[in-house]
Amino acid sequence: SYVLTQPPSVSVAPGQTATITCGGNNIGSKSVHWYQQKPGQAPVLVVYNDNDRPSGIPEQFSASNSGNTATLTISRVEAGDEADYYCQVWDSTSDHYVFGTGTKVTVL
Amino acid sequence: QVQLQESGPGLVKPSETLSLTCTVSGYSISSGYYWAWIRQPPGKGLEWIGSIYHSGITFYNPSLKSRVTLSVDTSKNQFSLRLTSVTAADTAVYYCAKRGAPTYFDYWGQGTLVAVSS
Image (cartoon, rainbow over all chains, first blue to last red; front, side, top):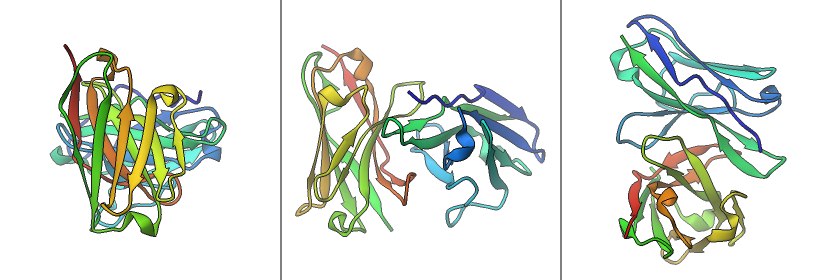
């Protein structure tokens, strides 16, 4: 089955840029979506279709996807951005949705 | 604004059946889109369980397919999950979600914790 690999943790100072990677075989050929999950809360979609933002999601969230790696970038990080982040794709080979392993973003 | 709310027992005994219902408000299930169940064991990542269309078309995670049944009740604007022969490994927060077009989940319920224990 298709596997998406993320780094377990990323630490970033306030005001700096956090970069979260999502690795998968030829992931560049798929549409990648990203979710933010704060403790005790449901996930929230922050990027869909590689680099589109839902209404209400600030411009500081951006993403890219190419080759075997998709990337979520959070610019000008604030304390409120501290959360777990998950990437997600639809695997047409096995007909199911796959989530990445998740990355905990810590704001120093 | 679409809202989803999970309901069901918070404790299920091993080998029994877990049953949850998701009530949708702000959108008619009959109007379209797929509706999904996703779970998250404590301290772990997200796992898609399955999805259902208002017509009853379903597709399931292959790893759970033999134990999962999804159903929909358009008259109540609800869809449901049944997971049979549960074990401690099925202990998780269970979320219901709406699938946006074409392959992401744009609205989620708050989640409900189901523990499997005798």
